[in-house]
Image 1 (cartoon, rainbow, N blue to C red):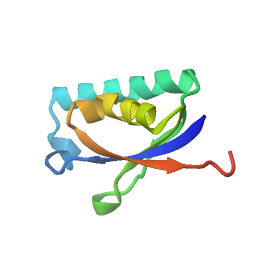
Image 2 (cartoon, rainbow, N blue to C red):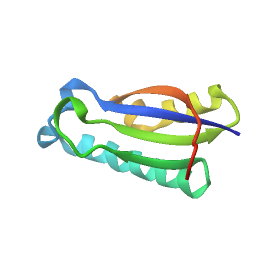
Image 3 (cartoon, one colour):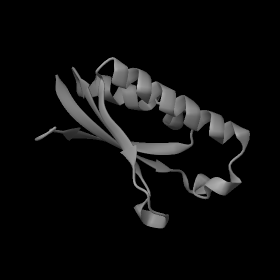
Image 4 (tube, helix red, strand yellow):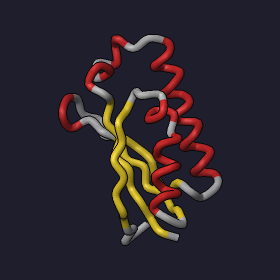
Length: 98
């Protein structure tokens, strides 16, 4: 298995979470449940986000997949990405300590 990290950032029009509608809140809930399910299967090793405002605000997901294509598919199927709330970038990654 290979390891990958994808970095998530809110699209600019959703940067102010106080303006979110029920739709955006639902997408975030689906995003959480998607990652939780993958974590329970052992695919997602870690997921979280920074607790800052502004330019330093982002999330990461560290996952295991057979191929980069599989990792990219997991990332693209993340409801936050497919729901166009967040943009994501995939990186090959190696966990050194856990």
